[in-house]
Image 1: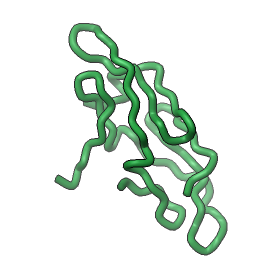
Image 2: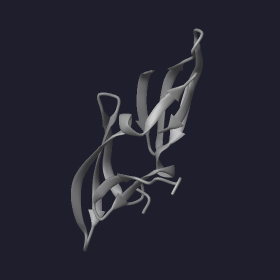
Image 3: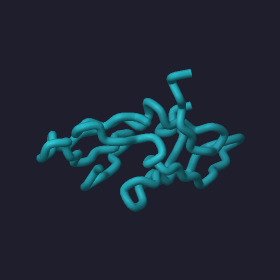
Image 4: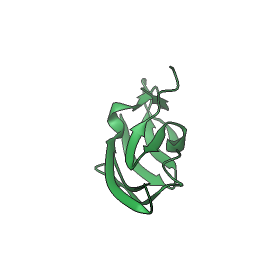
Length: 99
């Protein structure tokens, strides 16, 4: 289940810990967290799944200034958390699409 449509009060702590109250059961809510550092990285200035600064979350988009290997940045880049973060019965989970 998409985490965004089934969660509320979504926020980011320390630039990498995603917090949300996730729906489960009959109109019940569970506070859940997931450490995005375990799943999101920087590859030469591009977000990749599996060095970032000025990180923020807006809806389903995680955005940041990403450093390139040589020097400089590619500007602000984004990754859609809904692509791989889900709500599993009130818990934020990583959805591995490689299986």
